[in-house]
Each structure stands twice: as C-alpha cells, then as structure tokens.
Length: 79
View 1 (spheres, helix red, strand yellow):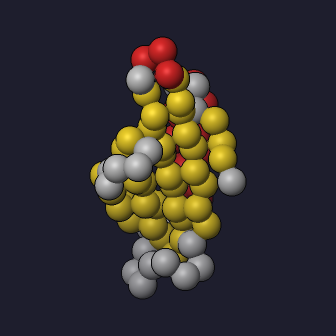
View 2 (tube, rainbow, N blue to C red):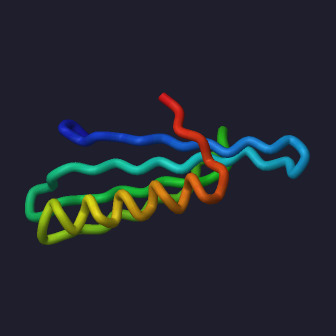
C-alpha cells in the first residue's frame, strides 16, 4: 500500500477483557480515492473493508466521521 496514510486506534479495557484495534488507511487507488478500514482483537487477524470515493473531499469527510466515532467509543490514537 505505497502512498497510503494509516491511522491506528486501540481500546484496551482489562475489566471488560477488551483489546481491540481499528485502523484507517487513506490514499489514491488506480481509479478512485480509497478508505480501507481494518478492525478486530489485538493479536488477531481482524476484518477488512475497502470503500472507493469519487473525490478526495468525500473520502476525507468519511475518514473524519470514523475518527470521531472511534474517539467517542474510547479508542485512543497510537503511533
């Protein structure tokens, strides 16, 4: 995924036995702007969903919406 920017969130709550990750990758594919979402339990394989957008502005709106949603659900940004 050369040329893609990746943002990773994690949510760890020992009381609830929760160890989750959520990754957003944005970039330009061959025919569209792409937003790739990966999520699952830390250490697991996880799930993946790719969505294409006609414009970069549409992709960035969805990216910002998903980042807000993760923060509301107590995920923290990791490097």
